[in-house]
Image (cartoon, rainbow, N blue to C red):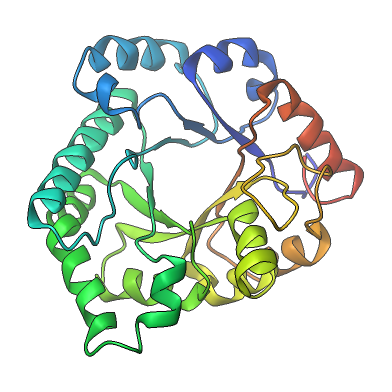
Length: 272
């Protein structure tokens, strides 16, 4: 087998059935994306999870899920919203147990507004960390007990270091860093953030998950790789300095182009 990293993908269970042979030709990591929807989590998620568990039997790649994120911020100033965050993430970990997943993607609390104002208000940085601990501290502990890892994905993050320091503050192997390349590209092009490969340097070996998508620096495109402006060689060169073996997950809107995205990386000599 080639020494190139094996590229995985994010998809629903229905899409996995479509790409079944592709996902099994190599030990491709999968991120299941059915279970971020609150209506499903409050409904018959167990039957969907049971179907996923059966379908994934024999899958050789690592299994993760995208956790809930719609409608809340994990550092919300409202304690009632933080209680909802805990509820949703407990539901997400229930799903992880049911499908055999050992990683759950969650979203960073840092906004573009934060970047310009965290040093404008007293104790603002510490307050974000404190509220996040209140919201998910018990979730991190449960993840530890399960052998699961929460990975915190950049969304609007302009400063790639703030999220990393938040992760470090938990002093737990059950929470780590995720990078979404398209989000970083948007932040670089539209809000003055550093280039995409700098996000890897900031994370270092705390990086355990990557969303691979292409973009134009203006919006969150989720284009197939090669359709945007991201410079993939320096990004993968930065990844090559790590020993944390992050999951490299193609996350694009047009799921029919997942194999083409992987083929594009292969044509560049970056992945397989």
